[in-house]
Image 1 (cartoon, rainbow, N blue to C red):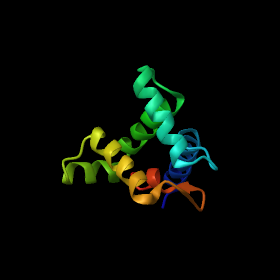
Image 2 (image 1 turned 90 degrees about the vertical axis):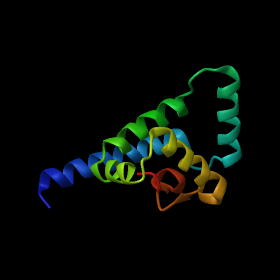
Image 3 (image 1 turned 30 degrees about the horizontal axis):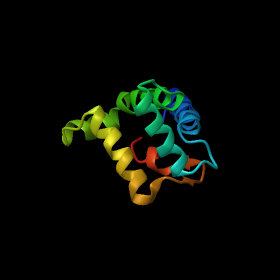
Image 4 (image 1 turned 180 degrees about the vertical axis):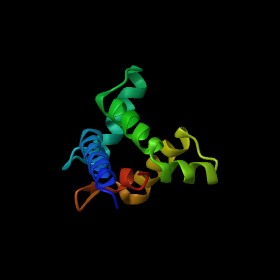
Length: 107
């Protein structure tokens, strides 16, 4: 693998990891995340978490592998958000080896 590809991959991984920590800080519970999302819906204001999630999805959608899967299964950005929510509901709302599982599933 060319060095430039490795550097880009490392930068993207670092950016994704930083965004994961903004969206769901380690040590926070899924209940905290649900409460934050509920408050956002009620207030109508975009939270730091929502902004970070939007940026996270931007990065995912820019990945050629994710683009290919989205094309194959005719997935939209809203579908990616739905997968994230389903992953949380299904028990993937936890940190595993430095990755928030529900978000890493998308990337």
